[in-house]
Picture 1: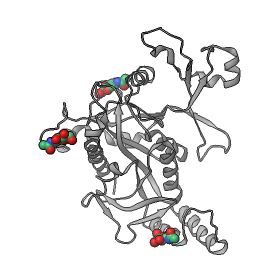
Picture 2 (picture 1 turned 90 degrees about the vertical axis):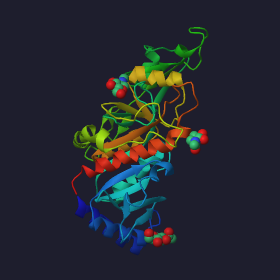
Picture 3 (picture 1 turned 180 degrees about the horizontal axis):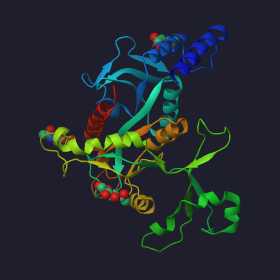
Picture 4 (picture 1 turned 135 degrees about the vertical axis):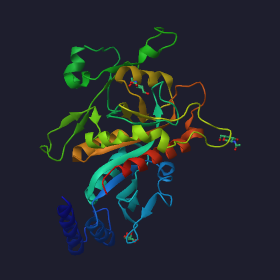
Length: 348
Ligand SMILES: *[C@@H]1O[C@H](CO)[C@@H](O)[C@H](O)[C@H]1NC(C)=O
Ligand SMILES: *[C@@H]1O[C@H](CO)[C@@H](O)[C@H](O)[C@H]1NC(C)=O
Ligand SMILES: *[C@@H]1O[C@H](CO)[C@@H](O)[C@H](O)[C@H]1NC(C)=O
């Protein structure tokens, strides 16, 4: 695997020299550096959404940059080469949302020799027993933003709609906007229904142009099993932060929670009704804007994946203003603390 990466990249360099291939998202120097970097690999990929989540990882003593080539810029992204907990890593920041997360994960896998992906960040809790500051290691991820929006007047079993949209669009369930009218049952709601659809995926070992469907994406069983070791030493050995200063503290001591179902979409959720819908309809405990994209790209590339997300807010579930404004930084720090602890469990 590793040597095929290297030969591909050597070939790329030769092509670049002979044809000056301008379509490639990199310059010659950067591609030559990629070859050198891969010779010293393979690496664990660490995929991070935003600057405030990247910050707490990139501090001295946590991330140790490579003395040879500390980073390389490719296709608009900076790939940081170095070590975390003495394990070789390549850290990359994606930017907000599904498209950025998906593209960047694919770039990471296309350019570098990567053995697995750890993704982390903050999230909104849609589960009443998950509190701000808690860190989750969910077992499943779903993209809940691929919709089939039904015209007004048609219902679940409308034959015409089924003929147009296909049977598979009816498998996961739907949101009926009228259920949220106040007072209940009051008026007609022209927004009607949206039906959730599974993503189309094209695995690297599948037949090109033959789609498969994926809604529930399970994290890597080996990574997931390893992460359960954090259960035992979490409280003694891993004090998660509870306070941002001497007066602002969380209402409960943060904990690490497993066995959950997380969801991602291009939506910053701060709405109690939709929060409650996701929880009752799909048993979703947390929402963010990237994890499912990283999970789906890892699945297609058949690369092990796990995500660690810390709760910054209740996704609209409390009467107070969104908690992320005050506790976003604390949540990001708690996620990083658990990520570092997880990386320590991996072989050197
Ligand atoms: C090409 O990549 C090298 C190494 O990463 C970098 O130092 C240089 O600034 C890049 N050149 C351009 C034109 O982007
Ligand atoms: C603690 O942080 C909160 C929220 O940012 C702020 O309102 C408060 O003034 C801070 N207290 C101290 C003692 O700095
Ligand atoms: C909510 O979280 C708790 C753990 O904090 C878990 O036991 C429960 O199953 C979760 N609810 C759902 C619907 O997943």
